[in-house]
Amino acid sequence: MTELTPQSEKVLARLRILREMDAPTSGGRVLSYLYDTGMAELDELAAQAIRIMQPVNGLDPTTFPSVAAMERDVIAFTRRMLNGDAGQESGADNEVVGTVTSGGTESCLLAVKTARDVWRAAGGEGTPRLVAPATVHAAFHKAAQYFGLELDLVPVDAAGRVDPAALIDRFGEDVALVVVSAPAYPHATLDPVETIATAAAHAGIACHVDACIGGWVLPWWGGALPAWDFRVLGVTSMSADLHKFGYAPKGVSVLLHRGRDRQRHQYFATKRWPGYPVVNPTMLGSKSAGALAAAWAIMLRLGNDGFADLAASCRRSTDALASAIHAIEGLRVVGEPTGPLLAVATDESVPADRRVDPHNWADGVRQLGWLLQQQPGLLQSDGTRLPHTTHLTITPVTESVRERLIAALQQAADGVRGIEAANGNRLLVALPPLADDAGPLTSVQAAALLAQLGLGADGITLPEKMAPLVAVIEALPAPLAERLLIELLGRLVEPAGFSATETSQH
Image (cartoon, one colour):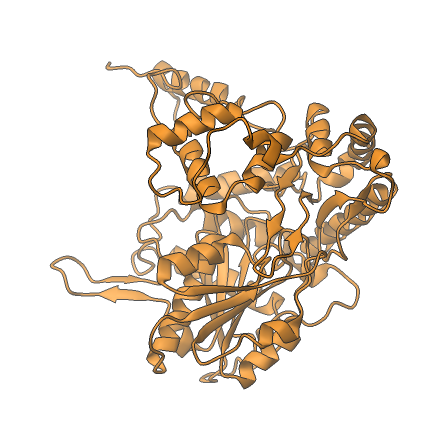
């Protein structure tokens, strides 16, 4: 191993200081974003695999055949896991083929882009529609915006369940794609995949199953789950993220299509410039092969039995946490979750002075050293409102800290029981009148509003308690809330002197 110079050691020391600003990425303290097995060996395996592939450019597998070899292995495992091996005889029209992408968002974007192009090739004209339950992941909102589709969201009930008949009723010749989730992230609801995909096939409409979060855990979840994968013949594509319950580092996902001809619409190719011919199956051109190598290594190390063991751990912890939350007066688990996800809401069946607001509760849990994810309520197109909730993602490491976590959940609930939920409309009273149309807001105006909301004059100072902020986001008109959030995130990375880094001209 090459010995580092003092200057390089100084850079790494600074990096370690910056990392101390972050939420803990191991140990099970953060119940969103992270997918921790608790197995240090896997972390080291991933790190070494990334280091081996660090200089490799995934752009061209003809120059770097290791990339193609690893991708073939990952796609084969994923296809088998999602029951896509049926019909794999050579030349079959329904053969399942796929691509490794940079993450779930890219998989979702490419699924929509492919469906739009297939629809156009079949004679579709005008603006195509994308039909999905209101709980579909935000990546499909992004895809519709990027690729010029109309997003047609079907309202769900308070448990996150969509009425399949209501969704099927939206079908028409202008629908390029229907999307269902396995499960949907907000409430862990497994959409009625078989009913909807079968109806879509009869109508000649493509159906994508977003299994980004469930694809690498539901195959081993146990119980009699309804069919949700390629066993359903109407399913034309699926996405499944290796950097979630495949336990790989960010970012790596798999997008599978039923049929080579369909999947080829995903590609971009051109020879119409004076450089080398460009052929890309994904949105990225040059890309690191590190995440693919880490995912490949972890997949081989765990195998079917290893993933089954980790899924069983997640199942035990999910069941234990759901039972513990059901036992906390004033809280309830939303619906009937499928997979290692829980959404928690106020139990309105108890008297008001015994209720627990889930966002106040999450703030209380944060003060005890655990991070839960607060989700705003949603006003749907039919006028019904989904309640605001707090989300928990359970991973294998949760089992090692489960009793301490349950104690913190109970303690935090006792500390906020009977405290009224933050009222976003009341908090907005002190602000000047806000127009529904946020388009004209300049960055200076948006920053001033952020400051009035308690986020600091520079728009980057976050409050100690998040419940009031989330309540304001929920109360604001969507265009204005989105504009302010853009300003907040934009200013987080704007240079403001040299406080974050120390540079040297030597």
